[in-house]
Image (cartoon, rainbow over all chains, first blue to last red; front, side, top):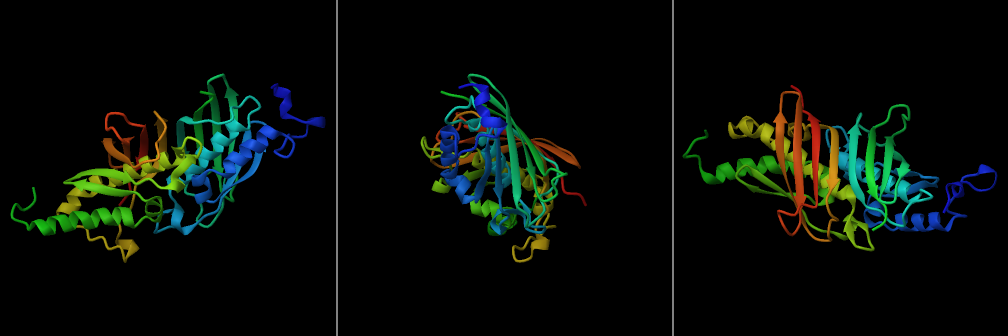
Length: 155
Length: 166
């Protein structure tokens, strides 16, 4: 598979609709039990990038006095989105596992707002994929969290 | 040192009430299903396996986010428990689950880095944290999780936290 497979005719992004690999990746993501339990939705997938959203729910609160989401929920969303970006890479594997993941929490997510994670697989070798991600709420200029991770490729 | 002759039931009740306030007062910790075993001041976080914790149904394996959340919960509860111990033992704290404003304020995570050492199996997980340094403003905590064998951890993490002020 070549890099230029990432774009279709006239440079339009290849989507799950016309790339069987992306369709398989989306199928896999849609059936992750924990992602379903948290209510994650794949908003976009392709060209080494992924975007996944998750609605705020009272049972995901980490601080009952403020209603702010628990860091663990943000971790789960970031981990899923980073893994999705690896699967969405033209040279990506059919499945992947997290090697390490660092999350920096910049500010509390605003209670009640949907969280949106955007991840990009910015380098991939035969064995490792390097990924970074942002978590955003409605104030998209001020990220809630950033993540950096390494993911396995093959074997 | 506490009172040597303090009734045992009173000692246990004070500590278990505080631990319950730290754990049961947090909706997400309850949703994930994390509970804590206590032996004196030593805490072990326990995450009973459930189908909804799976990240890869083909293997199957625990979701990496579940592992991260479990480790972060173990770190935050361990840190708060240690920070409050003296006040708790001196009887200066009276947490009441019915009154959220009486519950201890929790440290805020600055960053959290997880190393995934092997895949999490579809069975119960355990974790213990160790406070590397706790200052007035910041703390650094290490935490390790295992399943069948204590000396074969499947993940470990380091996190930095801002301590609650005032």
